[in-house]
Amino acid sequence: MVPLSKRSAVDPFHAMDVLAEANRRRQAGRPVISMAVGQPGHAAPATALEAARTALEHGRIGYTDALGLPDLRQALSGYYRQQHNIEVDARRIAITTGSSAGFNLAFLTLFDAGDAVAIARPGYPAYRNILRALGLVVVEVPVSAETHYTLTPESLEAAQASAGVRLKGVLLASPANPTGTVTGRLQLQRVSDYCKLHDIAFISDEIYHGLTYSADAASAVEFGDDAIIINSFSKYYCMTGWRIGWMVVPDAMVRPLECLAQSLYISAPELSQIAAIAALGAGDELELYKDSCRANRDFLQQRLPELGFDLLSPMDGAFYAYVDVSRFTNDSMDFARRMLAETDVAATPGLDFDPVEGHRALRLSYAGTMAEMVEATDRIARWLR
Image (tube, rainbow, N blue to C red; front, top):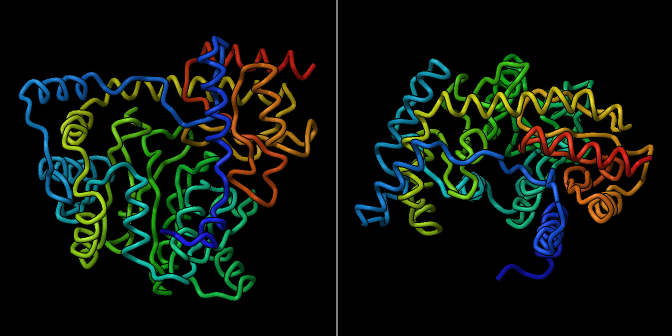
């Protein structure tokens, strides 16, 4: 059991509170529109659904190797060849129970209690919570227009000096949650090279790859075999509930990670792995979903500032708008609760992502339909008036 002192260090995840309240209101018959979570508004690809149906008809679904089905690992090796023009040995690819399991496995394999790991602020709150729960030191590095809303070697140096620690790990997400930032190829390589030079483990969160609109999303795998890549079928492939993801790891990490995965998870669900193989070939259908996200993004880029919600970062990728609500409130949690109660529109308070400055920010997910985006912003406009 985790000691009480360690459990109390884990911050509440307010998005889940907002989502729970939104679900209660929806069950009570309220016309709720949720812009609170990153849930794609599209079903899993038809090819994935058909593959799963066929597998169920055969009736035998069980455990797989801890690192996943060989066919899926080989198919993902082909993905890197096609998408990034890089050869990745399928042996270095591990299939995980969603990206969440990937983060757990990476942190447990790479770090010891007391090690310092850097993440961006604002950033995905689960990073902070998992790291703290494992007894690791979280070094939150502020990002802004000056750093192109991502980590840089200079900001990492400054953060270490300020915190009085030497980093053992750096976690960078591109596209990022909540900012939508895509770290450019040269910037990503600079961070990768910095980590190699200083013997720092570099973890690249690439779970929103495929959902980029105005920038080229490089993978850290392009810059050598040292980085740990974490990706998922949840977002671009619209398979959140299937809980299926993958990792690319250095050779030396394969066996330790396999042993840990066997103990913690046995294996990722075989049915989801079968569906994932088929999903990798569903490019045309997935691009239609991406186009719908792009249309939502273009609409919100214009509409949100008209409401008084100024953008805090460019909407380069993923499906989030991170906005400034300081002209209306100094308490984003209270603002999100009141907005849900009075408009039936759910959004996530910025405090989830930034415990220092998030009181003035809100994250809006545009993973749903255009009709939902229009209706939600119309409701918010009437409410603010």
